[in-house]
Amino acid sequence: RVLSLVHHEPRLADKEGVHSAGGVPLEDVLSAVDSLCEQSSVEEGREAAPGVGVVGEGQGAHFVMQAIACSRRFAVAVACSGYVCPKMHQSECGELPSLPPLALRSTPTDLPLIDALGAINTPLFLIHGERDECCSSAHSKLVYHTLRRNDVPTQLALYADEAHTFSRAESLRDATERTL
Image (cartoon, rainbow, N blue to C red):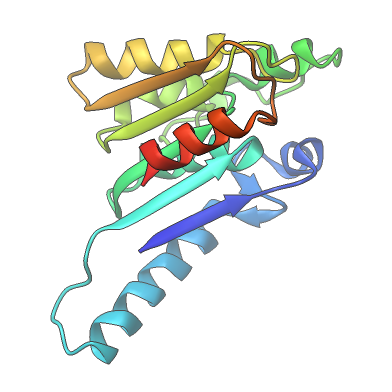
């Protein structure tokens, strides 16, 4: 089973708080996943749900990484063109970032993703275009190197001729095949 997180207005999600996808709190998404897994198990006559994968692109990729930083519900995750540091992302988009002081945050759900990477244990496949002007591939490279250093199974696929949204058929095909 795969949960896909897509958000078309990334700046709106960050205004409500670091941990929302389109205004939906992370806890609500995780509760929905639990409910779907329980329902699936009952319908299929199993005691436990199989592993659930989560996939996100752009803002959805950021949300995927937040989810796997504070939850062990997912067996695998894929993040395409995601950002890990809101301040860096906003500055890349020409905006001035604003977040509450770090001292006010204490758990992975309260931390900016960049500070919660050490909590990730879920295998992660990162996909990023090297020509992404909205969210540089430095974000995915940072996640990749951090997780590898922490012995988390992680792969990084960089596409030299792609931007934030992939447009070349061969890149789309390759990324899709590698994701599946």
